[in-house]
Length: 457
Ligand SMILES: [Zn+2]
Image (cartoon, rainbow, N blue to C red; front, side):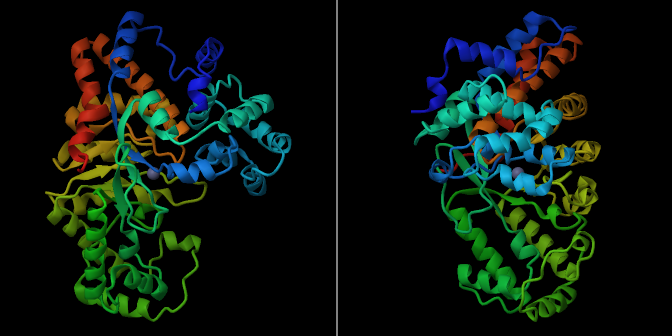
């Protein structure tokens, strides 16, 4: 049984209300309108466009430690505030005494505790573990509650508490095409590895998993096709690309001959290349990468698979954000008009790029995954602008984007509250009726995503 359900005492419900408002009611707006909309939006079973939820059995065998939750996203704010890298590693060490880790954490937490990432963390601790204040005692109490987690925990948190119908899972750590719990997830899978192979060992590994000896550009394409088939067999519903973590989203047309020349040079690299900061802009095998990305898009279009693409700032604390501007994808979007592009993270901070692309092209949707925790007010502003500019059928309103179910819960609560606020404001301004506001919410939180990523049998 889940500790979370056990701890729903009157005290903890009250504490959670005091500690973790997902978004306070807006004083200028009719309270009745906001409350009615909030109730209607709570009833919507979300179709969640993006998660990284680790397998439940793996989660249950990991240390039962609330600092685990600090390790996803919140740690990036702590580091940005000044937490030394060595101390960040120490926080994650569940064997170290809680008190020592609290001393390292507390000064930085104090500065970060109002950010979106911190809000999701506070909501998770308050609502699911009955911890009203992030303190040494609170962390110890959360750790005790976590000891009671058991199988069924994900269904409890994701379905019953967060009211998520199902989620698109990017289990990027999973080298093998296996199927996750079909009650909770459909699959997104990445093939960036085939687009930008590192060196010969990568090509050899592709050979092992596909049975194709990858010794030419043609063989690389054949291996990619086979890998896509393998993943379709386990229920992949969309391709995913996070290649903007490695290089620019500008993919120029590259001829077969130029790509083959790069391939031959790559094949000669017997050792893995180590990553360097310059890699963000210097790509020694660029023609091969450009050619293979176009190949991936062509195959996706031919097979009727959508593609989810990371656009906007990368997670972590040291990457090259200008590589991620969504407008760099314009030539690809024009070249593959039947391929459905799901542009992630509202392209932050170049949100206008994503808006313009979705406004122009029938094959582009904007995706608010990660957005409500990145900055709730920024996401609210973006949603209002998007609703003023776009057919609402093109907006995907929620993707949790977390490894830990508790934080997906916190994020979903923040999304519902902030979407309620935007829709209440627009209804009050006369943009639409209260009934139509609910229609929009149903579309952006469930129906649009369900159309793009239907559950597979
Ligand atoms: Zn993600």
